[in-house]
Length: 374
Image 1 (tube, rainbow, N blue to C red):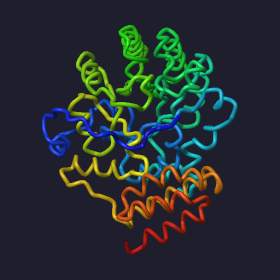
Image 2 (tube, helix red, strand yellow; image 1 turned 30 degrees about the vertical axis):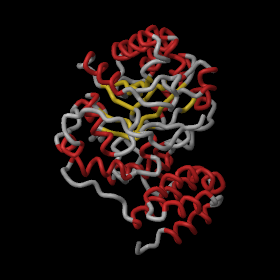
Image 3 (cartoon, rainbow, N blue to C red; image 1 turned 90 degrees about the vertical axis):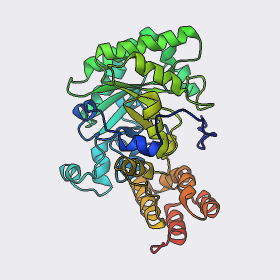
């Protein structure tokens, strides 16, 4: 499925103050780091299919992301030893990219923790087994995906499809929560409904309420319907209404977060407890640093050419180790297009990145366009 990577014209919403002022008075809800030590800010890197691999997450960590989620890992694929078993093992990734001993990494904050393994599937027993496997692999949180709008996912009766089948969704949620040890938080990713039909809104509420009853720590709710995919706008008003009616629960928000200002606008307008940053952090790990700057009362720092160079070289290096030289050269194109937006010669850099196929070509363009003394 094609994912639109450029923001639509912004919607003007009435906020209580300017985003910079909202940021200065913002603090993380104490329940969040109590559940997940290290999750110390009210924003995080979302799981985004085809993007949020170990390389992207490690780069985000070095720029202030307090918590990350993997892209959705299919239960059957995990159980059969396919994608996710090696390429998404957080501690294995840290050791393979040269960060050293796992325990030393955690002390120096160079590891991929805290991290949620996001699992998606159809059958409760397989979902439970895959969730338990994620725990054994060292994930700090297990996140159940009931949101993915991809057509082939819908045809396979998983992801966002479950929003049409609330009882099936609840059975999956129960199986996962029962399988995962009580010390490991379980969370759920939802879209606000299958579509805008009243019965679908009711189905969402049934699943949402039952998740907390079962013992899920929080729900992350995307403000679009499944049918919308990534079109149109996320309805922040729906999130605001949900939080007001369920004020005792941790609710995280998602949808149309493109810059640090958007993070604080959503916190203020919707009242959510944390904000999921998805498309807005592709090729832009600095969004997390900027958000932290704003919370500290400082002007957000834009990345210098030197900082852009360092982030790109790190991303290339991590991707090469995780995916192999040939695959990494192709995978980096979709990131390079977004990284180029920060460069003074945006179009030239974008064009050069699009032509890259090998890691040697990537590093050559970076050397040419991002000089050491830039």
